[in-house]
Length: 359
Image 1 (tube, rainbow, N blue to C red):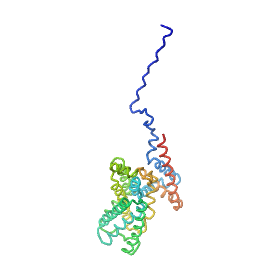
Image 2 (image 1 turned 120 degrees about the vertical axis):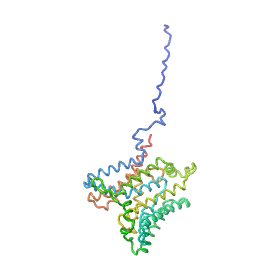
Image 3 (image 1 turned 60 degrees about the vertical axis):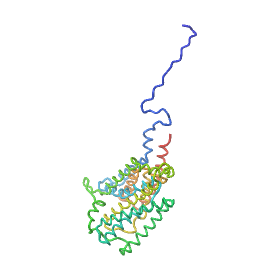
Image 4 (image 1 turned 90 degrees about the horizontal axis):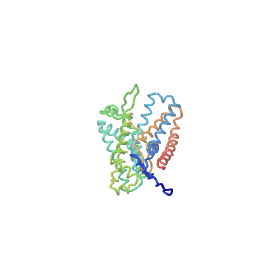
């Protein structure tokens, strides 16, 4: 062999990428932890778990089954309304009239039934029509005038607040409606809206079941239906959504009507739980519904959120509201806790989103 002969370089064949592996760094699959952080409900889930553990240690009565049933009940009355409010926020709007709309629905059902001496189901159906009409009005005003939902629903809030008080005083001569517990159909309606059942010796309110059913249905709608895609699209950019064929007007109006449906359901629960309704109630509840949705990961700017997040957000509210009582603290601190929770959850959600999108 000649001393000048050179060895030819070895030819190596790069190994074929394994199945499902991406070699382009731009499309590489992100770690599981980052994919989980991208979910809007992860932050509030961790927060709800922390609040639960905190009160389990600081308020021993919370460990009792009946106490937890009360907490779930309080959470459900907030959570049922927080769900449609969250869907509306994902769609880029919010409703300041949601709290007083609950009372409007209950007042309507009570006065129609009692003053006209009719079966309570007549009042329930009329109240549903009125609640859906309020949502329709809010949505129609929004899309026809182009005004921000803040102004439209603030006007509706003031109108309903005044009407609730004035009409109730005019019709009943008092600020509260009359007792309807002895009227036809009351027991059947109570069984649907305000009954309870026993689980392991603990009474659980039916609203807890409805809350979970509505949450499952809202999650399915958001993630598995065309309507859910429309909600995210109009919340992200309604002009772009309209350009690709999304029915923006229908979506916006129907979301406000969903809030009306939630107000009707919660209003019926209040009516058939207490047999009468105070016309001045409901003011301030809209902020709790919105806060539960925000704590649950929904953005005020729209286009982002989930239905599961507000479930945990409502649970945090119920946990704090009842936990303060069980701990023997002054309940006046609840609103302070509420503010801390809202700011903390907003900062956590912001950190989660930045972490999830960081490369």
